[in-house]
Image 1: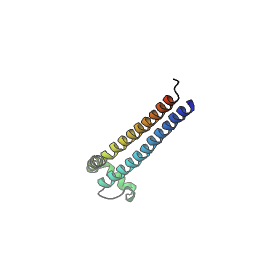
Image 2: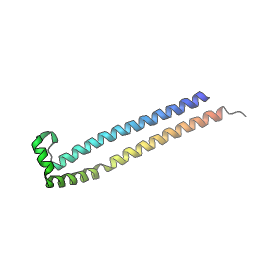
Image 3: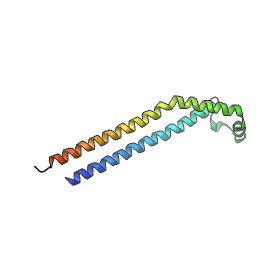
Image 4: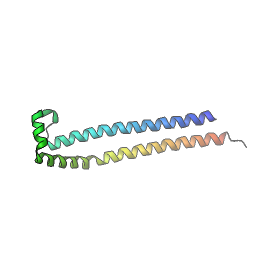
Amino acid sequence: MKTKVYVSIFASLILAVFVSVLGGTFGEALAEHVKEETAELALDGRSIADLSREEANALMRSPEFLDRLVAAEKEASDEYWWYVGANLAIQILLILVICLVCGKFVIHTVTKHARP
């Protein structure tokens, strides 16, 4: 009985860590996409890779470009905020479901083997 309980708890911890890692990976990919989107918005559809070093340095010194960059960051964050919220909510719900299933299994195992 103890072995079943320990294995189920260990399995639930492994699944919870897997959900967390998967959510973190999605979050990193989303952050990278938001950065690319922000750069394209600030550069009027051009990519960072299309710029030369001198052109990029000149843009970074330009107050007009910095204003466009701030506006682009706000627009991109307004557009993608719900992805971040959904990612967090899904992670929390999955971890709660894993804990609930593990708890039910542990309670069932313990009551099944309880002494009268």
